[in-house]
Image 1 (spheres, rainbow, N blue to C red):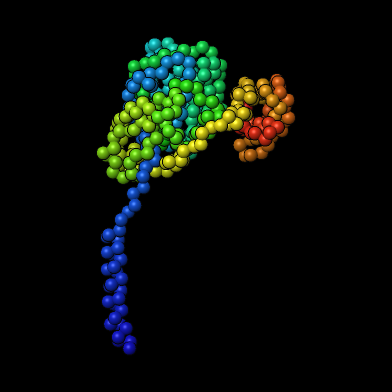
Image 2 (image 1 turned 120 degrees about the vertical axis):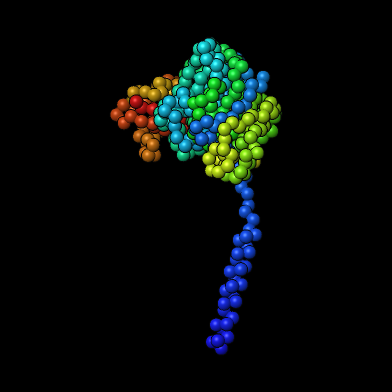
Length: 357
């Protein structure tokens, strides 16, 4: 019996090995659809052209993008996210980031009207939704739905430029972005805080019917990290439908290519906003100056409960505030970024970053 088993066993092992080799050789690898585009920060950029729809002029605009930075440029001037820029005279619009996580928003009407966020508004290795708006009165920057910077810049009538709209570079080529990018949107209207917060974590439904949407790049093309060298254009899902061109991308491998893993899931559209979504927003609570050396002034349209937290999640200040003018004092606390939470009597809550210098 022993000899019999010794004789049969080698054939059994050989059969298993042979079958395993056959399975491996015939194995079909499931391709993973890409969800965004990786920029190498060296020379990658997307040229979106100069369609009439993106030649925005007037006093209303919104720029949006979802970005995961791999490193920051030495200056925020050098990290171009969305750029349509002409210099001397200065016309166009741009959204940039770099230099210790500063986000920068510019509008040109012969000279640049500029707004920058505090340092560390965005961080490396994390997906952030970045938005900038102008409504004819105030320039604003939002990060992940939180208002991080604003300034009154009344009566800016910014002008169009014949330079091409770029993603990842400025219009004269350079100032490259080292980041992953998804969901780039350009609007010729000023989106409200409620609209930005509601739609930042999803794809837009019926994009060709969205009022004021003049460019919309979803980046749902290609196969994750595969040979995508044939995919050198980027579809515009807005009514403009102006196809963009990829320049200098490797389009093969894990960088400078179409990749998966965006924080916005393909096909995840949001519900339509109702009137209730606009009931309590950042327009109801104004904080200034921000940054401040310690004393923050408040202008509030309704009674709220204010809470201030440090970045460790520790509450440093609770305060009940009636409608009207008020203030709170962080002079005794360390310099840095704090989180301001305001809750009205109905339980509606808004959150904003404040900076104590």
